[in-house]
Length: 212
Image (cartoon, rainbow, N blue to C red; front, side):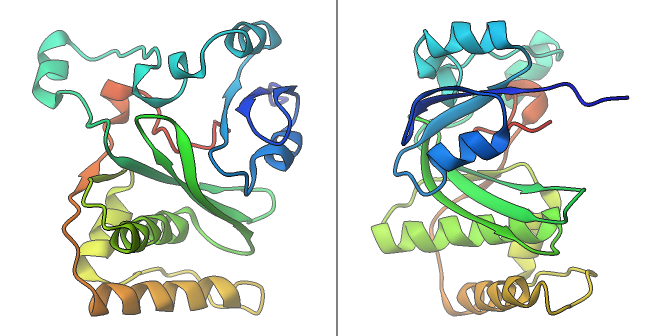
């Protein structure tokens, strides 16, 4: 079955507008300070979004459809807006991985790293959390950090990336990054609370790459 095309809205980037491929969207947003963008399932939805405020679609003001009961939603509560969300992405056709961190309140992309060769989603989810922790330490931020990866959060607690992925010349840089991240965790303390992003209640992680 053919994969349905997606449309990418860039509200803030090198060029703004609607793009029909992730590569074109990435060219406008990768490394651009404060980039704001999101994917949509149809051109009509993308056009509607582009002519609306980005805050209706990214950050915590976005419209979310939840299938949980009111009781379940009440127990989970709402996420903290003054926080960072991190997420990773893995391309199953190329093996390329990347990650990014977003300030939830505004949707601003605080950092983006990749693509990196021959990795796994768990590797970059782990690196994203450590990157956010190191950035917060540098900026003297004590705000919470959200991740939707239970595995990565567990690795952080153990201060060890327990990947079974094989080392290769292609992923040498990625394994070096993992080693530096482990060293940072063992050499530093932090006050930031690490929290699980509740996708079923709140919708996709604000740092999600929008490729699902």
